[in-house]
Amino acid sequence: MLEIMPDWLLSWFSDDSLEMIDYLTNGKHLTWYASVRYTLFAAVLSALFAIGFGLIGAALKQSGFFLFRWIGNFYTAIVRGIPDILFILFFPLAIEQGVEYFIARSKCTAEQIATSVNWPPCEAAQWFLTTNDYLLMACLSLGLVYGAFVANVIYGALQAVPKGQLEAASAYGFNQKQIFWKFKIRQMWAYALPGLSNIWMLLIKATAFLSLLQVTDIVYWAGLLGTANYFPSAGMVHPNWNFQYYFVLFVFYILLTMVSEKFFNMLQAKASRGMSVVER
Amino acid sequence: MKKIILPVALALSVLTTPVMADKIRIATEGAYAPWNFLDDDGKLAGFEIDLGNALCAEAKLDCEFKANEWDSIIPNLIAGNYNAIMAGMSITAERQKKILFSNEYYPVNKSKLATESGTKVDVDNIKGMKIGVQGATVQADWLEKNLGADNTIKSYEKSDQTVAALYGGEVDIVLAGDGAYDEVIAASKGKLVFVGPGYDIGGGIGIGMLKTNTELAGKFNAAIATLKANGTVDTLIKKYFKKGPFYSVTMDSLKDKISALSARVDALEKK
Figure 1 (tube, each protein chain N blue to C red):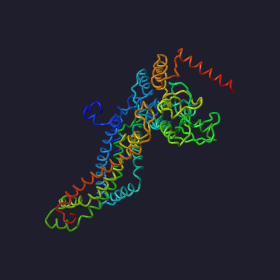
Figure 2 (spheres, rainbow over the protein chains, first blue to last red):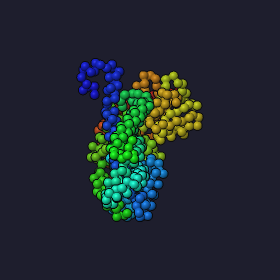
Figure 3 (cartoon, each protein chain N blue to C red):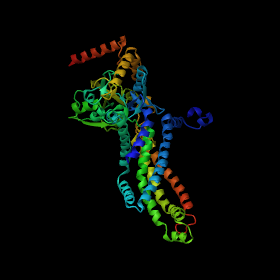
Figure 4 (tube, each protein chain N blue to C red):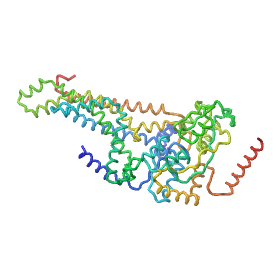
């Protein structure tokens, strides 16, 4: 970093702060800053998964067929009751072993499957997970967990659309399909958005769990960089700086949620325009 | 349900098959300088990274290092997250029950006590001290067996944390394998010092692999023998540890050995 700074800029800083700038822009730190992409990517992808699962869940919950209704209620009840950290640890493992199970059936010999004490039974069935695999699985787990919340919010919002609106639409001669899409679903968003924005905030916070799955995200790097270093060959010698690094994370997450809040306020205004019931 | 799972699993297996090709994944801790650490660019570096790459080039293997926490490094090998471990791991009978070791690539050497200068330590009779050590190491086992009764042993996840504890006054002395504290003490500007002659703990350092993976062990052993013979291992030891022990016999190493032996004889005579 210092090499590309012009001389006049360099002369502005004292030697100490130059050293600090050099430290804060070394490869380790640049990797840390770049690892924000994992957090943002995970948040957005998990949110998409969550909306997908949520819509399916809500559809199941309000289905006329008892089995679907039962499945939908089971999904929301069970997922909401289990700590998300368990899901994050459990799902990737379950998926990995599930895939390995099927590969093992085709690639390992029957004898290996019967006698091996290790998992998977033979080397050929070993699935080495890369960071991206883990990232995808983490997003899927987060999507499943928060999908259950989304299902409840959307289900509640569908119920909240005033019956009178739908009856009025019917009186104006709209058919059932139009009433559902143009009135029920259209108005549902206005009721669902406050709840969804809340879930988005929770989801952003949950992305901090990524580091548990060996995804080298901002939390992982902050922990690593904050650890005391006493080896000159491994970089600047410094005592435990965990407090400083975690404080940066603290600020980062607050900024992220603040920006999200602004964004959701905009969406809310858009979704509820023309609706006297929810307009503020 | 099965109808859905099977195609998905098959699709995934097709997608992941290229990944399963002959790539050898080597786990290291990345926090045990100069053996292995993260350099300023955030990449793994150190004695074992250089040596590992040299060994793989020699054995014509396609290798890749990845970082893994020390305390889960053996369980994750057994779970199949990687094929080998190069993390300053001593070859011990205890570990050999679980995993297979290659021949050593770094000789047995002394583990040393370090303390803040000014702390009085009676090396022959250590009592009532708080001793810091990295957990799940041969040094931790040794301390528990030999000094555990009269002292408080505190174990830490990382080697760096033991030094932080020493500076912070949480512990009075720390124990680590040779080489791990050399640079720390040199950089401490006299605040930290080694005490005592050190102890012989554990065996040499070797590559850990799955017990079933004798094929890989054979390849590594052949490469280790070649690199020891052509001096590559010694060059790397010199580069990272600045001093021996070396595998080749040189005049300097003989002189070192003789002076160490005569110092021992002197000490015995005094007793």
